[in-house]
Amino acid sequence: MDLGVNIIGAYHSSFGKLESETLYTLYEKAAKGALQDAEIEAKGIDGVFVGNYSGGAFNRQENIASYGVNAIPELRHKPMYRTETACSSGSSAIHMAIMAIKSGMMKRVLVVGLEKMTDLDITGVTEALALATYWPEEGSKSVTAPCMFADLAKGWMKKYNYSEAQLRPWLAQISSKAYTNGAQNPLAQLQKPKSAEDILALPDEKNPIIHAPLRLHDCSLVSDGSSALVLENASLGNGKGIAIKSFYSASDYLDSFGKNKSGHFLEGASFAVKKALKDAGLNINHINIAEVHDCFTITELLLYSAMGITPAGKEFEALENGSVFPDGKLPINLSGGLKAKGHPIGATGVSMHAYIYKQLMQNAWGHQAKNAETGLVVNIGGSGTSNAVSVLGR
Image (tube, rainbow, N blue to C red):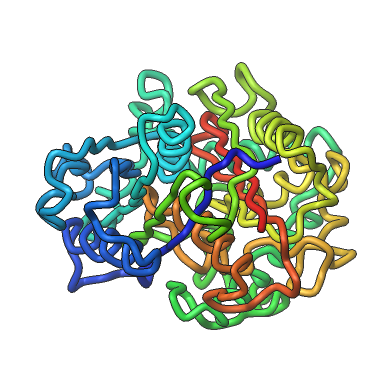
């Protein structure tokens, strides 16, 4: 089953510390790049949806969506909207665009995701990211994302009786896979492969504990970057592009793991994956490639069970049997993921969709999957609070 909405073009900047770029140049390059890739003129766009987590906190610029007019004056008087659902802001922009096309009010839509995070020092970045927590009980009390996902790791270890000594090699394998894949991606922030053994052998000063059991090499990156897509009603393109077969966004409690939601399983992501696959008439065995949210290595590990790749408590089996590696049954994060590709928050969801699109078009940035026909995006905002999933196919 298809929704009747196709992706027909994509753009992706380099991710990293982009000192020569601003929030505005990232927007303009993404918008123009996607239109060029789709071979569409701006006058053919009916609306613009922009994923941006916090231009206000990072760059002192809210109301960023309408900058599309400054970037491309031909878009003047077109509707433009900004979406914000923490780290899934970009996927939310895509989902809103799909709904606009499905409603019949728009035929062809531009989606842009962007974030410029490195203008702030680490204290400023931490404060900005804390705004995605439940502020009265978490952000205001210095509870940060590493704290929340470390609690998830602890909850999982306690539930299934694993030690930190057992967990660390599994997490190191996920980091190593990200670094190895990122080394083949010319747009990735980190392009130097590391083995799991190299990571485990690092002294504490080279791989310090951020919030136990998570260490530096378990954490995704502070990044600048942008990505963009052109979506259109499939009736316009005579089969051009890649179909969006289904999508779903499952919202969950705003507060952290182990309070109102599981402290050892990604319930919202699991619900969204099951719903999206069912709506597409597929199951996880039909998926050939996936880009998933590895904000921390523990997140990717527990997504293996949330996606149905392994039973809960046995997520490490996907590493041991090789199924999630490039030559495995379901390669995950061939881009390098958030861990190596980078994580400019508002751009992340759009980036994940853009990578799957390029893979399915057999024109990948980096490692090309063989004969991939269906792809899955799993993008999480906050502590499993916004779980955006999309199924794409030829």
